[in-house]
Amino acid sequence: MASLIAALIFWASRPFPGRFILKGIPVLALALIVWNHKKSRQEITLFIALLFHCLGDVFLEIARVRLFLPAVGAFTLGHIFYILTFKVDVSSHHGLSATRKMLVSAVIIFAIIMGVVIVPHLKTPLVAPVVLYVIAISTMAIFAFLANYRTAWISLGAVSYLLSDSLIAINTFVHLFAGIAYIIWPMYYLGQFLIVVGVLMGEKPARSFNNLSMIQARLLQTVSRMNPSQNYHPSALKKSPKLF
Image (tube, rainbow, N blue to C red; front, top):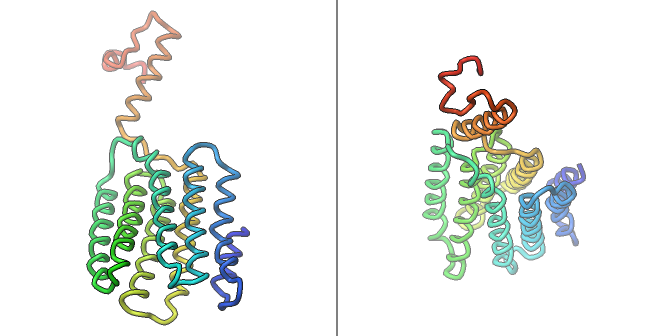
């Protein structure tokens, strides 16, 4: 609740001395929530990702131009730790729906288009850091889809974050749109919030048929130990219709 309240206050506030502290509170509060609920390495990598994003937020608010590259570096590291957070679940799935394959392809195409649109407007020293950042945030979104989570919390969070940063890039380097900050900040915070909610809810990949077969085989092995006289080998399923 403190995170959401701080995010709303920052969104509605005007620039004032020390505003960078207020900007850092929403994501920092999410990080502390994750730390208090940590159960595995996944929550730890998520906690580190949020800390880097909090640092990036503070850098941009202190001096958007002077600290732009340090902020980009912090956000890039944050996305790397997001990737590590999702990678645990990517390696545990054995199938991906056609819809998610299309979404992965869409992210790749979107990243290429953003690069083509933004890079011509960048000064030479900014090209490499910005391109690296585009790759990092796009990979983060791709991993969110590859993990094949049962619900859409994490995927929606990744997309919301990707879109918010795309608007920032266009607004900063291509064309300035008045009032767009009022859209960017809610999308950015919503993205972080949904990712945290998804991870803390214990979102895991939807089980594929291969996973179900493994579970079924283990169940049959357990039953066979309890009743050795009966043949419960998976190959005997068709011969033992009374089992199911």
